Image 1 (cartoon, rainbow, N blue to C red):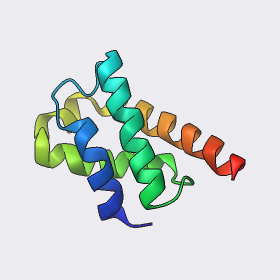
Image 2 (image 1 turned 120 degrees about the vertical axis):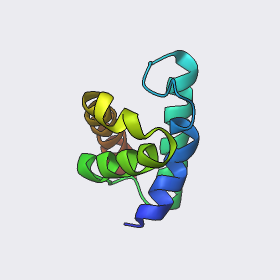
Image 3 (image 1 turned 45 degrees about the vertical axis):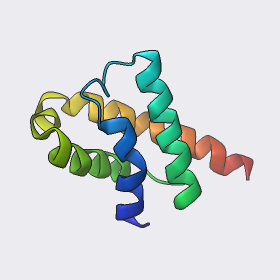
Image 4 (image 1 turned 30 degrees about the vertical axis):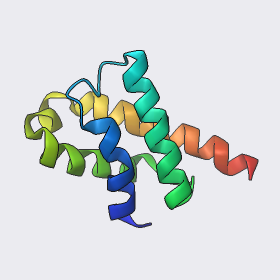
Length: 91
């Protein structure tokens, strides 16, 4: 798995400080970023890989968010894995 491609794909979702709010626009950016990640890499990325990538991107864009939103990072990573698993099964 190419970690840089994953981080680049997640960047647009994680750029706004509201990435964690589950606002419809933030969810839209999350789904668009997952689509970009799955197109660039493949859909079978595990939650740990997503969590690492999310933390890496946040450490550059919003360093305090890595600690403050640690539980949200885990939750979004798990959501991403589930969506990826579903797409992988459909291939």
